[in-house]
Amino acid sequence: LFGCPVLPVTAQPVSNDSLVREYFVRQEAEQPLVIRVNPFEAEFQVRVTGPNCEPLRQSELPGNRTQPVFLYIDGAPRERQLDILVEAPLFTRQTRFELEFSRLDVRDSLSEKLARAYQLLSRGQEFLEADTAANWSVKINMLIQSARLFEEFGMEEHRLWAWLAAAHLAHFELGDSNTALDWAGQAIAAARLAALADPAFAGQVLRGEILFQRAERPGAGTAEHEAARTALTDTSRIAGLVGNAYEQAWALFLLGEGLAGAGEHESALARYRQALEVAEQRDAATLAAEIRKRMVAAHETLGDVVAKEQALDTMVEQLAVGGAETELVKGLIAQGQLYLELFRYPDAVAALQQALEIDKA
Image (tube, rainbow, N blue to C red; front, side, top):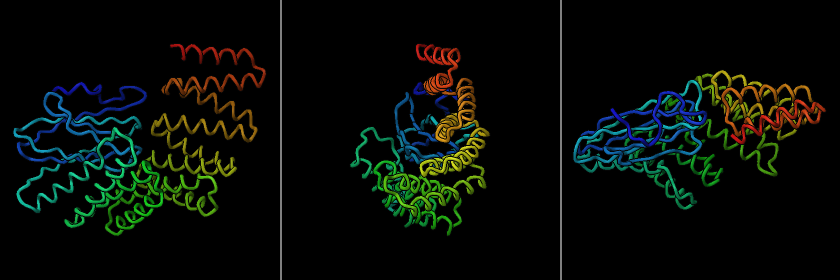
């Protein structure tokens, strides 16, 4: 089998920045196919191509790490092989994808309505080139229509995924946190009632992020901060129970961010340390580097030069092993600046010279 040369295909990270998986499936003649991609500890997009690398679908929910993506592939006159490429710019050592395939037999008005529900769900999650509020609103409306159609068929899990996708887009693309929070809350309650653990967890993750961003707005009060802390604490606890270390680390990191923003830097450091321990267990290099940066800033605010130097040294060491070069350059510059403040001029020159050499390369 030979894949289309859209992206490098490998079972390992193709660089420090992305992970790619490739799958193949046969589509029967005249039979629509629904492809469902379930992620674990990954932010991802999916591309589906047909014979001769004909592009068929490209889908993603920007910033999503817990919700599945659905792709509706129209039937073709002849049987064909489909090439499915999943690219994850954010991944961990435990990242995996599970694919499910549903072959639709469209014969009457009822089966046409079900196919329509899948089509709307798929189109609502398609990659969007023209990033405008109007286009995102259209996609959200498609997802809502899809949810209502799935409700008619008693397909509660699909209904909840459609609502959660709509809530995700409402928050991250339209900035409508009130609507997104309401929809996420309703989805969580319905998922728990139906004993659907995955949508309930995805809703909890989304709810925590929404409340965190609301608490970070200028003028946010005590109630907003408390709501965010409670939600993120719940997310971290549940993520630990279900074994999703990335979401656990991310929730702990956001808790630290909220505490640092409130001036509680000692408490923030405690959360950062917890987040870093979990992130490093999963080799989540990007998140670990960001946590270390925030720890350096917290030590600086507290005036602890020794701890700041130790955190910077460790951060640079980790970035030199497997981090992005741009972040390594920034770390070396920060290290050089600290050495200058400590009058350690040879060390400062060495760090800044190394940063310059990497930047030139």
